[in-house]
Image (tube, rainbow, N blue to C red; front, side, top):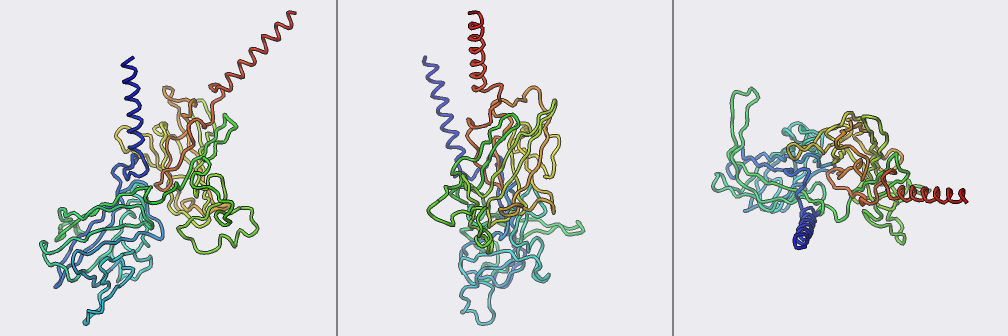
Length: 442
């Protein structure tokens, strides 16, 4: 009796710990445990009153990217520094530079905010890895475009390693909140290899800043949900009601009726970060539908459909991360790119999917064209394969790095030959048969 009580208490403690470990407030991501954005600040030369530095932003997140209108990076100067000029980026405000008579600095604010320059910027204002409009690809999707850089000339600063003071209070918006940046830390100077690879130079001084993402800080409500269906059950499991908010019937304009005669006038205007979603029971901007489509002797096939319910947002370079135990036997995939993610050695149960360039990497806003779809073919593993108890459905789905809300497990489409309904049906048939035989005997 005592052992049973102890085991029950242990199970309860483990359940509580698991609930606290995986809350949405944590920046730690179990599917990307080392993902972060690292800002590297390299001092490459001294000037009479300061230094010239190249600031590079590396997106080491496997599947979370920054889309238009792009990132903005801010900080606070430790002393009375000013920015004389910049290349590859610009501050959003100049500030009060009235005390400078000989020349006007680029920015005199104590807390500058820097944004990337747009594509098409003149070459004499560019440096390597700049001018992408603040868009950063994820590391797994496109590492060549996961880096962004700008050059800054800082005045009224130190002119030696001992007199330079590191900036403080770094902030990163992408383009909204969500990222928390740690303090700047001096690290070993970065080394640069010349184009002919015969000489190596190094920065005079280097410091790093690490920024991590929290979905809870980015938005208070979920941004996507998952619905399920299968060939072996007529039930379609929709997203849970009020997943991303509840429809306010007393406030017209809170959502859009797709059958409205004034639809064009309602959704017209420039795209904004504030979603304007199609009226639904879940009120989510994005829905991911997983359909178990076919069952073969040695294979099984599923269909994934991503639907955009947001009339104000087009998703470029979107991606989907799916966790399912059969991804180690993925045989074929159609119309999506695929890359296995293995955050833990020896565990291949997570896949990253994204659109084919110039074909379906652009997810249009809500409407007839607001969806993309693909099919995946898996090979059965006789030792582990089963359709029973929801095995055919994913464990977790992310869209653009945000964890989507799954339906409750007890709502999953049930397998007819293992369901309680079928048991009762067989029992009823058996009773009817007995009664029929008794009647015939009489």
